[in-house]
Length: 58
Image (cartoon, rainbow, N blue to C red; front, top):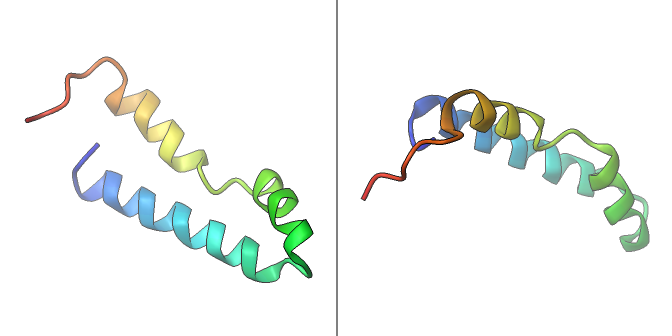
């Protein structure tokens, strides 16, 4: 959702993803770190709760 809550969730998710990548010891571990992190959990939960089934605004 393009509002203050949705934007905050996206920024929090990107922050978690970046932190996971930065903590990886090598490039080979990056994919595993992202798979094991919950970086998109809030984004998906928000979409399921507030965005699913809504039409996009133009």
